[in-house]
Amino acid sequence: MRETTIETGAIRGVACGWPSITAYYGIPYAAPPVGELRWRPPQAPASWEGVRDCARPSARCPQLGVGKGSFYEKEFYPVEEPMDEDCLYLNVWTPAQSKDEKLPVMFWVHGGAFMTGYGHSAHFDGEHFARQGVIVVTINYRINIFGWMVHPELDAESEHHCSGNYGLLDQIFALEWTRRNIAAFGGDPEQITIAGQSAGAMSIQALLTSPMTKGMVKGAIMQSGGGVTAAPDMRFPPLAKAEAATDLSLLGVTSIAEARQLSWKELVDRWGASFPRPGLQRTPVLDGWVLPRSLDEAAQDGDYRHVPCLIGCTSKEGIAASPTFAMWKDLMTAEYGPEGAEEFIALHNGEAGYQEYSRNHHFSDHMRAAAEAWALLHERQGTGPVYVYWLDRELPGDDMGPFHAADLWYVFKTFMRCWRHWTGKDYELAAACNGYWAEFVKTGVPRKEGLPEWTPYTAEDPRTMELGEHIGMVTLEKEPRVEYRKRFLLGG
Image 1: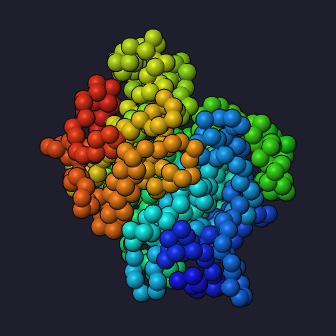
Image 2: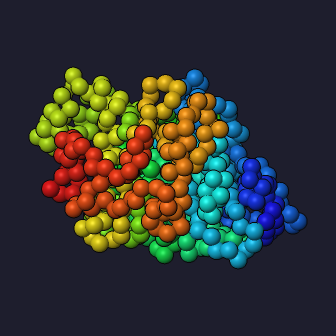
Image 3: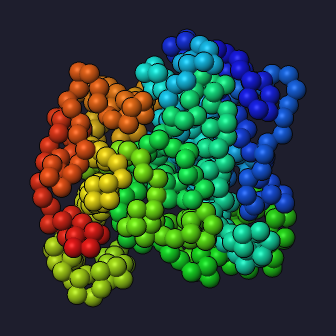
C-alpha cells in the first residue's frame, strides 16, 4: 500500500528493506508553530492538492547539539540533521496491504531530556515491528525553549490561563491525529499503545495522567523513565512559574511579542547562553490544564489511564549526567528530609562512594525502584498488570556497559545503524526484546511463542524479566538503596 489518503490529502510512501512494508515520512500533523503560533497550542495542518511525497523526514525541532565528540554523538547522532521551527511532523511504518486490516499501533515518543532528539532518528526505524504486524508511529514535538516556555504574558493570552506544556500538547495532538487517521494505514484506532524512552517515558506517564487522553490508549511502555518517583532531577519538578519562566531580558527582549519576532536561530543562540542551572533546563510543568496535578499525586490516587504497562531500565543508566555530591545531597535532603537523607546517603558509603555510585548505579537504582513501585501500586489499586524488565547485556566495543538508551537498538533491532560489532548473543536478545514488545502492543501481554514466559511483577511474585546473557524471569537481588526508596515512594 504505497499510497493512501488521510484527512488533509493523498500521500505516497516508500518501500522498506522488506518490500511489503511501507514507510511514510514527514506527514504534517499540525500547522507550522511559527510566528504568532510560537508558544501556542498546535493548530490543524493545511490540506493539499495532488499526492504529497512522503519519502523524506521533516526537519527536527531546533535544539543545541549533544556535543561534538561526545559519547552520545558517536552512539546516536553522527550527523547533524536539518533543523527548523516548522517541525510538527510524524512518520508511519505499516505492513498493511489494505485499509481493512485493523492492525495494532505503537505510538513512539522520543527522549532527549526534553531538550534534544527527533522522531526519525535512525535507531527508531519501525520496520522490524511492522514485520511482526505492528504499525509504528514516531513523532517530532516541540522541545527546549520551544516546547516548555512559561511566562505570565503567555498565561494571559491563553483561554486556559496557563503556559508551558506546548511539547505535551503536540504529543496529544499527534495522538489524536493518529486515532483519526491510522485506519488509512490499515491500523485500528482503538488499539494504540503509547511508548517512549527517557524523557519520552516521562512523557508517556504524563499522557497516562493528563485528563486530555481519556479513552485514547490501550497500553503503555516506559523505558528508563516514568513510574513512581519524587526525585526533582528525575521527574517533572513542581517548579513555581517564577522559577520555570525564562527571563526575557536574557533573550534581549522585553515582551513575548518581541520574542516571537526573533528567528528560531536567534532564539536558540540567546537561550543557550542563559542556562540557569545544571540538569534538565526546560521540562513540562503543572499548568492546571494539561497537567492539573503532579504525576506522583495522581499515581497515588489512581488517577491515570488504567491500562497494562511494560516498564524497566538498563543496569547502568549512569551515563546520564549526574549532579555533584553536594548538589545530590541537597536534592536528597529536600526529598527525604535531613534525617532520611542521612540514612539514605549512608547506604551509599557517603561521599567516598558517591563517584562510583553516581556513574554506575544512581539512575539505575532510582529507575528500578520507580518501576517496581509502579507495579506494586497498580497491584494495590487493581489498575492493570505491570511487566518489569532489567536489561543487563554488556555491549560489545567498550566497557560502558548497558548505558542509558542502550536498549533502543535491541527493542527496534536497528543494529545496522550503530558502529558497534554486534555478536550472535546481541541478535538473540534483540529478537527477544522486539518480540516481547510487539506482542505487548498486540495483546497487552509480552508473551511470545518460543520465549520464556513473562509474568506481571507483584508483591507475592516480585520477579523481573532479565534481558541479557540470560533471558528469563529472575528475582533480582535485594538492594538496600532500592528497598529504602521503594518504602519511601509507597509510604512505608
